[in-house]
Amino acid sequence: MPNEFSLVKWYMDCVTDCGDAAILYCAEMHWRAAHLTYSSVLSVIGGTKESHSSMKRYRLSSMNRQIAVEFPRLGVSGRWKADAAPMERTIYESAAGRVHWNCLQPRSEIDLRIGKRQLAGLGYAECLTLTVLPWQLPMRQLRWGRFVSREDSLAWIDWQGEHSMRFAVYNGRVWELLAISDTEASIPHVRLRMDESQPLRAGRFGSTILSRAPALRRLLPPSLANIEEVKQLSRGKLNAEGRVSQGWVIHEVVDWKV
Image 1 (cartoon, rainbow, N blue to C red):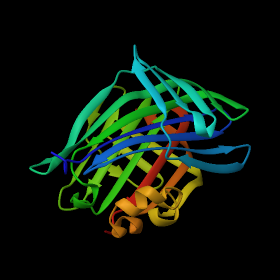
Image 2: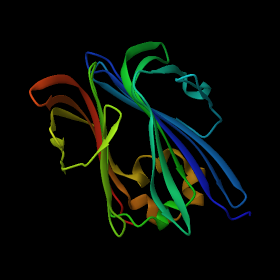
Image 3: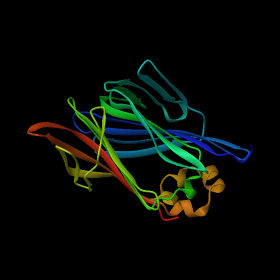
């Protein structure tokens, strides 16, 4: 039907040992007569933060536990190689549609090029599929994050609102998320501390994501511009019953003010 909605959004990141970081987004949206594509890269390299986006087509393939991606207009290309088992889950479903979370790579080994700069490190990759209009989601606040080290991977979702769901995936298994804040996440027998945090992006969507995508902003309801996001990069120390591993955390809080 012409009014059916679908959004497929990929998220991929990479953090080097020294803390240089990059986050890639790419998405395809179908709604009514519109078919839009979007790609963006957010990087913090050598203390310099940059953000670029494009509404032109991108290339992405996912097979044999590898993801290859290229954003030609942004000078970005990279390869994510899975180093942990995937996990997927439907996190919301109603008569209007569903939200399906596919964590293809809870931990990845990455080679990434951004312009003339090369990054190599550990990271993460997921794909989110929505068939329900985002502004109809019964959400008030979302906390999401991921920790990656050479030994461990931990990802979490804390969705609060009329529909609430919180869980974590630790080393391939689903666990109850006991507590989550800007500085700590815990599941049974495991505690992650986050410190030395630095902001990656903060503000309302109208002044961040949508400001660089005017075609998308014209199509979507104005209220979506009020969604507020705080995304951070932190050092992480995970303690699992006395065994400690250290890595990097990318985590965010999204306040749904539509």
